[in-house]
Image (cartoon, rainbow, N blue to C red; front, side, top):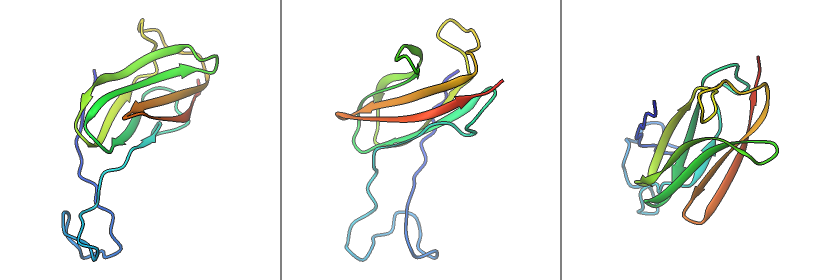
Length: 122
């Protein structure tokens, strides 16, 4: 089951500032493209992959083995800008549990490609 959460993330140096307030430069914090592969990492089962995209558009998020073969697609869709979350249950596209080892989580969005390592233990 894929779950999509939209979370507003505001980074500020002022702990008393409210979300969505305008900073000293007169601009609101802008979303950035990032990838956080796996929480927990290493994992022995399910893990959460968090990512953000600057601009709305087509997004591909997938898990690959170290040989570059796609193990599982986690997202292949159009998303709004902002932060998103996908769960990976540690299974391949056919529903089989993957072997222990290192995997790569890759995000492709708006001509950017980000890759992070994820370790699966038994």
